[in-house]
Image (cartoon, helix red, strand yellow):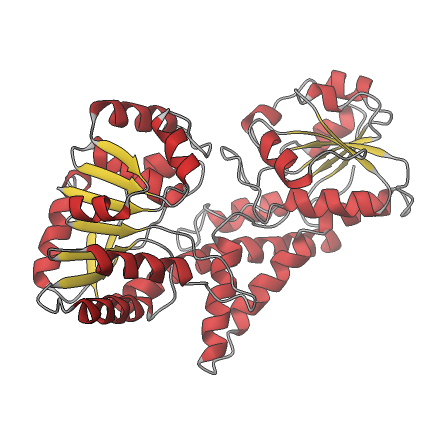
Length: 443
């Protein structure tokens, strides 16, 4: 099938590459000419395991192409994915200007019937706005003879495993009331739907809400576990034991119940906030969602609070080694990352940071530029020399089994603040460390 994808971010680029991989002819459109040219040259703008090779192979094979020419891209595709950003507006609601701009562009250039697929995360009712936008533009052109349908087809990709998630989806949500559109969507996704039927068809509004509900449920699990972790510290319990105890209940499960320093990234903070604003707009008080957001905001400060307490709020002139800058492993994304809250609080208190991350160093440099109180180091070990303590923010695999003797030797004092519970407190005690973690006793 001939597919056009508007947007070359996480969702659009991954979706386009995966559809090309199974044989569809895909054209990805973006307004950023430099980005498009770099994609043609094989430079992938994001770090996502497996994506680099996939894009290069499909581009070389001629099944995946990139352009800034919207008219040609619209002429190419029978099915048009909208996969552009929906950033928070000033009030926290989702900003739909880019979605509606794409809808208007499609209507301006289409010369045959089209299926328009909302892949972006959008509030309930967005499909109606897209439909009205397209219809209005077609009427202005005098082309009411052209037929189109607007489908909600939300993505469920996790940064760090987006390629695998797209290749082997748990479910494929299709929001439409057109039987003909359902059949075309089934044909599009047939290569991903072989073992058992993963397609779930529903009305458009339910599909739009499903995406927000899924992300908000996962955010709720994270905030709940962080709440229990804070209780554990104060009650003398061990959150890791609690986690195992409740995770063994199949009604709860082990996914997304790891305590830490709060969620970040491009989805959870934005989507929780957007659904709260949607609720406010219709006069409904989303008490649970507001509590989730508040707990997550507070949780991002807990690591700094432990550092400040240990040093009696005297951090001026001290230097801290920070391991992990991205909001989660296997990505270079630092949007809403807990590391940013930590480092900015340390700087405000007069401390300096020596930081390392396997992938997010360039992004850190872009965000903060050159400053005297930030040193970006080439290895995790090089952050340690003459640092007063080590702070772990992101649970990269390469941090799980470090050389503890080297850490102890290089640090000014053997103090570790672990925001991801990577190590066992008793073992750290035996090795001579003062060790702070999340929801467990201090040793």
